Image (cartoon, rainbow, N blue to C red; front, side, top):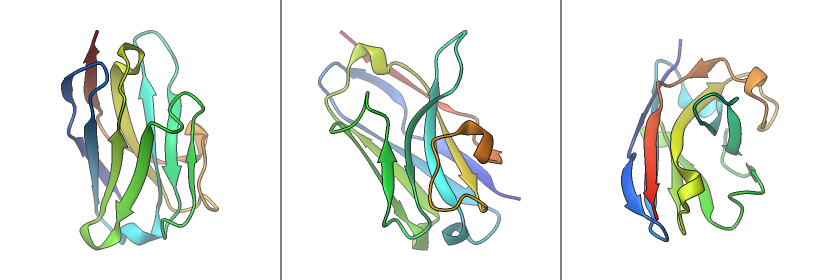
Length: 125
């Protein structure tokens, strides 16, 4: 059982930066592909970024490409999402996800088994 726990959300002004962290406890973290998704009220969960087990492969949604960077520290069981040039439309709840069976990384919610409770990001204009 893997339990991802997100942190680092809060309020930031448009154009600012914020770093989200996700600590995944419960088993060997380096065996899991990790990803970030976000979900606005009344909408489906949207892919943001994903990273392979070793960190050598990453993927991004077009809406965040060039602004967000995903990384991981397997020694600390932690994956990060560095968010720069934040926009009001980035405001929502961000979720961390983990799965051992994903081949490299995936943008599909259906491929991730373990999910955190989410951390809220609010970007003011």
